[in-house]
Image (cartoon, rainbow, N blue to C red; front, top):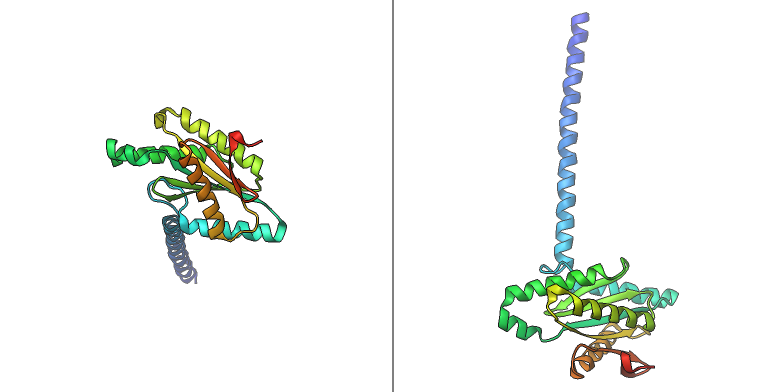
Length: 210
């Protein structure tokens, strides 16, 4: 009887051991799948060079911000930035240097914005920033802060940025992007390293606006 009991007990512990191995294997497999899912998600949402969000993620975020505006009246601002004379830098010093400048520029944006803000690489040397819960005065203040930091950054070697911005007030996505883009165009067309914003159907350079 005792021998039979020992056999049953041994069999029991063997089964537990097998179950533990299976549980550990399944746990590790689950962790691997989770890491892979995160990697694939980042790959689809982020720019490979800078690690910033891409256009696909922009569509998701701006639709959410517009929905918040419609439901709760929460304003948000859109800033469009462009590195001045970046093509000449690429042509003169090569794409490796150009890429380093884009990465440094991206790091500056990340480090000097709030956690709730969103930064996107729009394409080439153009960047978009969504500032949730931000009015025009605050958005202009952010733009000047970034402009100054970029100009003083030693790694960017006196590179400047032109900036256009607007506050959302019910436009569709294409319209608000076009407004920010036109503000940016005015900045570049007025000598670069400027900040232009849109208000009541007109564009103003921030330093000249009272």
